[in-house]
Image (cartoon, rainbow, N blue to C red; front, top):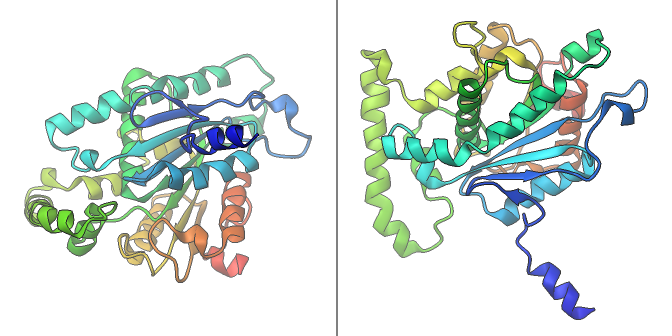
Length: 325
């Protein structure tokens, strides 16, 4: 018996998921989500949970989010997108090629959701307007991987992206020099290694500022990818054909204790979303919690936000913290 326990504990935290590429993982429950299994009067569970983790997130840390999702939505499939430091500057051609090849296995999963939705079934107003996918992304790393997969999906199919609800956790953020250097150092524990790579990180941040912040004031085409990513989440133009066109509602989880993603950036993004017509927007401010660690502030509240974002509960209030606290 002791041997079996040791064997289980030695398994990687995400070993229950199928690894489709270095950054794409997939989990399909034994009993897939179906409308028939949903009690009358209740919203059906997500057909797919699309989780996009922060840059350099370790398996053990990611599993602390995936496991609660399994408990809340036990019949939902899970598509996990990881993001590594080597992907941080996708404007470089070689980095872009790596992004596309490593995230490509996610596209057939999304296509299967669309094809399933197109199968013959009684058409109702509710089935045409409710979300089918719940997206949760953490930090700008999650934002980049989500946008990359969306672009691959758009090229692979002429179909619109499935209707969805989305949770922005510690994101989106715009460029700030010191937080940028700080996030590049995430995951580097050795002081010696940090000292050796510091000039490289500062050089990259200075390069980004000069070309994508300073020069973009006169040459709009040089606008930085972080700023472009943030704009894309709120783009409802038909010409863009963006993911936000099929978004049903969204929640932001953020806080003043986040030293990587500035609070004013998140709030400004939410206000811009409302101005552009995304009415179902919910702000959830956590006090005393750090970047991608807001769940530690109030775990019960955090997962209630997840469930209510899916169910459409608690929207229409300016600040979710007033509603929930």
